[in-house]
Length: 141
Image (tube, rainbow, N blue to C red; front, side, top):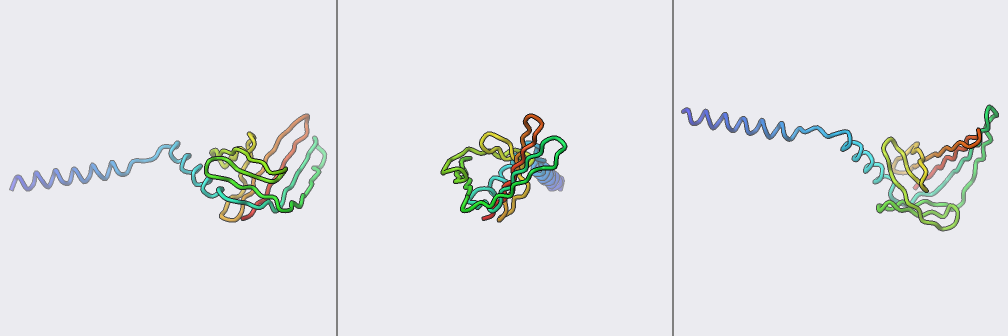
């Protein structure tokens, strides 16, 4: 009778140990890596540029906005962190996905504004000599 109780205790302790070990929390770095991989999986593939807006703002003046109407411009992102576009002639580029929806494109950080199965919007901003330049790219599949 005592042996049965001992075995029952051992079995229950083993189950408890397995449950506790299986409930290991992931670290913030693991969560960040997972988020980056999810973004990368969504971005891979061919995208068509449907709108490209350039905004220039100098000091307190109202911004000057140019709404371009791109024709047959595409971006293609590959799984090996390389891409291809015909935005300014046929060219290849390297890209990187960072935390907080940052896409490093042509060596510059751009913010991913929207990323769904069919929409990708990203924006970059630079400031020089008191003038802020913003470019927003709207892409669809």
